[in-house]
Structure formats: C-alpha cells, structure tokens
Image 1 (cartoon, one colour):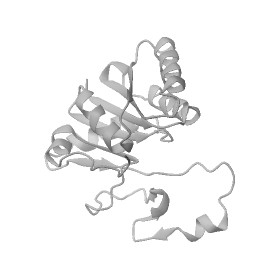
Image 2 (image 1 turned 90 degrees about the vertical axis):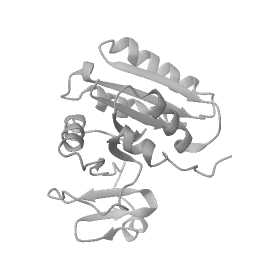
Image 3 (image 1 turned 90 degrees about the horizontal axis):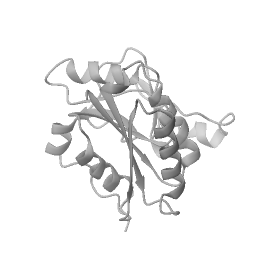
Length: 195
C-alpha cells in the first residue's frame, strides 16, 4: 500500500459520490492505495453515506474502500484523527467530500512526498466548482499574493502552476498529503470546537 486517502464527510452523500469517483479513476493502480471514508456524525447516523459506500465497494471490488461513522460529535478533526489510526500507509492524503482529484493526483502526492526526506507535506490547487458564476460578494472575498489567488473564508486556493514551495502556514486541511509519522509527531488535528 503506497498511500491512504482519507475523505471526511458530513451530510453530503451527493457530493461524496463524485469525490470517491475521482479517486477511483486514478492512474495509480488500485492495489497501491486505499480510500477511507470517515463520516463525521451525519444527522442520519450515516445511513445514506454507508449505503453509498457499500454500493461503491460492490461496484469497484478491486479498490480498497472502507467506511466508518464517528459517533462522537467532534467535527472533521476528530474524524480525520481516527481515520489516520486506520490508515495502512505512511503516506496520507486528506480530502473533504467536495474534493475532486485529478486523475494523477495520488501519483503526484507520492512523488512529492518521496522526492526528498525533508518533505513532510504537499498540497495543490483547491479550485471551486461553482454551480453558476459566483456572485460579486464571493469575488470580493478573493485575495491574491505572489503565487495564488484564494478565498480564506472558504479555504479555496488556486496556485500558479509553477509553485514548488509554500510558507508553512499556508496549508489548509481541505486537501493535502503528508507523512503519517509527521502528522503524528505534530499531534494531529486540533479539536474543531464542536461538542
């Protein structure tokens, strides 16, 4: 197992399906990765998400897909930390249920994480998929710097294609890859503040 993908979800099985589909259609051989779906206390006790994942397991038996429901209301942080404990690989990718991966995403994460022993974390573009043109109030929230445009209120970021290094504090949990050992050494995700 080269990499473990952790997808967090809460009440959004309609978006979760597209996210998992993008991970199923990777160029990386399915035997080289696992998909762990962590349901963060969905209102229906995870019934809809569990049914979706079970149908995808049946439809794609060559993929290693698993699901768990976090019974403690603790937000995505708690669910992600629990999923890391279940991960079989030392390389981990985190994504939310609205995360759509390009078909080479996992290979790129593996290449980046293994490129140098000093690399502990990699990330890439978080590009929104708007159902229609975004309203002006959304565009007004956009910020720019020398290497990206981003919306901090939504944790959306679009990098220039040639960016290799980012400031340490410019990583958001919506989509990134890291070494499990680094994640554990850093103490995992802090509590979300949900109770």
